[in-house]
Image (cartoon, rainbow, N blue to C red; front, side, top):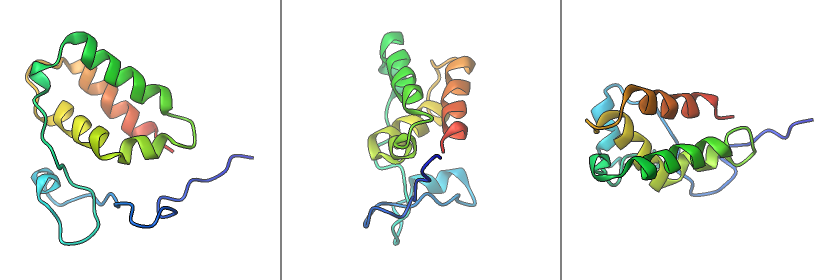
Length: 105
């Protein structure tokens, strides 16, 4: 039987709460919700660096720690930057990151 992963099991861990507007994900909150701490310039990353990020994140999906990977601040910042702030990422790369997020358990 699969063990369910409780998002609140780690005291002090940030929560992900969908904002009303996407841009609000970059505002520092007054509570414990996730926000984009460091907007990254993905356009400076090489194709290999982008591929490695997607591959490493994807390999964690389906395991108990997959949601921890998504909620890790560095990965969270990278995913947001990948999806919303990159002109060089192709549609396939962005779709891969979105697929990873939606497959998390």
